[in-house]
Amino acid sequence: MTRSFSDHANAVLAAVSSPGHAAMSEIAASWRRSALHHRIDPAATVARDIVEQNRLADLRALNGFLLSVAGPVLDHLFRAVGRSGCGIVLSDAQGTILDQRIGPSDREVFASSGLVPGANWAEAREGTNGIGTCLYEKKPVIVFRHQHFAARNIGLSCVDAPIYDPLGRLAGAIDVSTCRTDHGPETVEMIAALVADCAHRIERDLFCRHFSSARIIFLSDDPQSGTVLLAADRDDLLIGATHEARRRFNLGADLAAGAQSINHVLGDNSIAGFNDGDRAVLRQALANANGNASKAAALLGIGRATLYRRMARAGLN
Image (cartoon, rainbow, N blue to C red):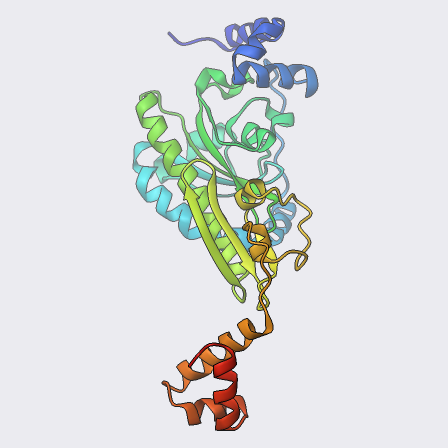
């Protein structure tokens, strides 16, 4: 049975007036936040907040790194779900849509729903919705049609996941939305898994490109929480960590590059000695010389006898 806009607004206000609902449902908690904290009217029909084209161009330029990395991932995701009437949206950390992938036959209905580049879907603007609530709560969300706060948004079903930048800061959200009514819970759960995976892939690619000159240590990849990556400089001092790595190792948002060794972060407090450093240098030289001691000594700028003495001291007999 289709619920009217006025019926939906009344249902939302009834839930908001009952604090117990907020404790029982994350959606109800967001509704209550939308009404009492953001002070939004669920029946409001005011014009949507859409930035002007020159401002949108500035935002796209500001987020150029994110857009360049996310583009191929958005294409991949659209190929997977686009034919089922889904549109793909990428927003910045403030909820403004920067990019989208929508089939030609769906453009009109998505435009009428406000899912257009430049539209701001922050929870403080639209109340409970996929993009805004995902960004506010900093976690993946699913918002079905009548779970939206604003009555004008109940034609949408949205699946979202947050994206974090290489410094562990919230960078935006990836969203799959549809106006179709035939997507049941099983379909939505499948789409949610795809969205989370794409968000993690974008985050991994952002991190690896940003720290392309560093040594990157891969520790784990969880479908729910994300990838644990650390970046180290040539001296094995920590210079970067993904959002999930910061959470797991309690590194915090104010990670000071070079203040900790990788071994210390991983729980190994041993300190490498000078012989360890010599051993690494000697092994690399020998590898580059294909095991030829004379060539290795020449590469290091030392005599062959000196090479042998240092090899013996480093345990490379």
